[in-house]
Length: 297
Image (cartoon, rainbow, N blue to C red; front, side, top):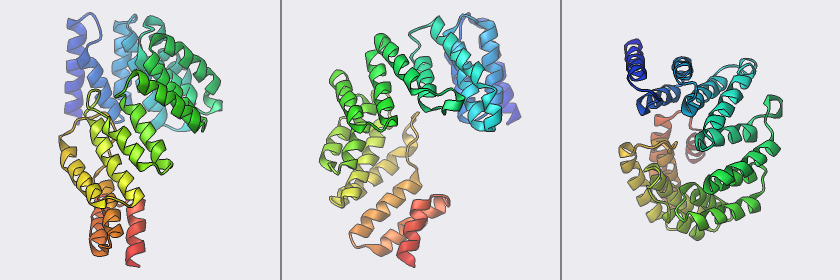
């Protein structure tokens, strides 16, 4: 691990010396460290970038990202001491480049989700969303829909999402959210129509997630179960080949959904077999354990 980390830092520093700006290699190196929750190393590298490129919006954004992961990993008390640096880094990133959508959405997310004692403020989030819509209407609408959902305004969220797909018919996030709302309303046919419109243009994981959700909708509706099982099999076969920034359901979730479909078809022994596979893969996956206990008690 130390050797690999040393190689990352060496490559990072090499790029810092041969280029005059933050490179994709440097950005990727920091993001990979953050995915592994190695915020300490990521912060060191991001701070080096800010020192080397004080006018780089990306450098300040990467530092803010590292600070955010640190705040998620340390105690609440320690996290409070980092909030000022986090907000300052984001503000600087936006000041240097108002088109830095990552920094803008990160900042809005903070005000939207952080508790009040930490500086969260939904009214501030709404004002910053309005400013974002002047820069990028689609991204602004995405964040506006999120805020409506956080405020438990489902009707408002749906209205915004429908406006969004009118501008961007294949927007995967909007289509996925609309599908979820449709499923909550037991309108599984409408959910399926939304999901079928999701493409891989932004991330190959989106259509794969749509495949899983199409199967989930059928299991929840207790109809077309053979198709649901086929979709889950196709999802599981494709999963290892897809590189995605999304958090895609793993095999334990797939086996659990398949088990429910088989149970609804009256194939209880097959359902138990699949639930055992799910629990074996992930002993902390409570839904599968609960259903296994229910079918074997």
